[in-house]
Image (tube, rainbow, N blue to C red; front, side, top):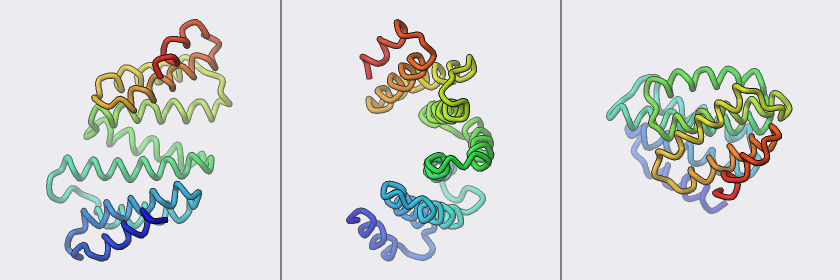
Length: 178
């Protein structure tokens, strides 16, 4: 994969004392493995990225927390793709604490979407009131973020949840907007 090779080449050029940049590149390498369905290799890259990032913020804290959450998003995508429920539940709780204390609006929207996806799959696509509430929270939070792709994602997620719940009339507007 060309992107993977480019990230690996860049990682070799980054100075050893620039652990933040190394962590970012390691996460990006992990993302390329995820796209290839190499989930374990991607998770190994997440582990390396976390080690490089360190346990506490170094430098601008907002950047550190943003990268920390980016690594957790990639980790979630990997364990979700493999339906590794104990890890999904543990990761969701760990991420909730970080998002509550340090997350941006986009991070909060992503977290509500994560909880929605997790509950849908866990409950075999039977949509509870709590899952619908998370989908609505993701939707309203995504709308405050200035990113059209996130708005489209939020519309689709809410519309799909409403379809699965049997609320077809209400689902039409967000699905058409997606």
